Image (cartoon, rainbow, N blue to C red; front, side):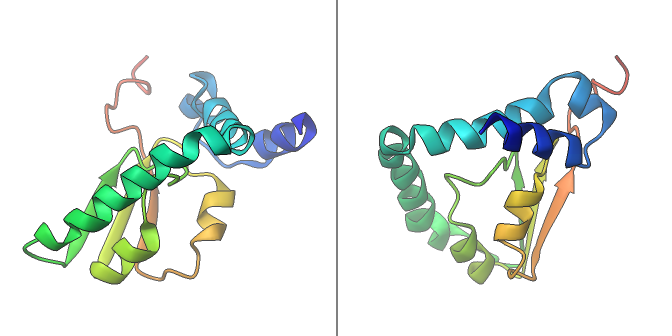
Length: 123
């Protein structure tokens, strides 16, 4: 498993800040940890997805949605959101290729890599 993580790290296209501050490493580690701990995390994931699904009807307009800190989308019912909104923008400092590939069939979804705090580039 560590070899796959290392290859993912070196083959990922992330900003130098994301690498320097450990965000790329943490993103990769989060996915691997989720796989190892899936039985323990599953109730939380399902609760989050159910909460979001239940409350999507509150949206008054369905033109666009912006999700900050989207991560690997474990807790987000992206297919449902993509079918509800015309445009879905997912913002995080790291967007792993594995996540992008999983949802590449959703044509109205944009993955945006950005440090929304704008602090790390200054440091």
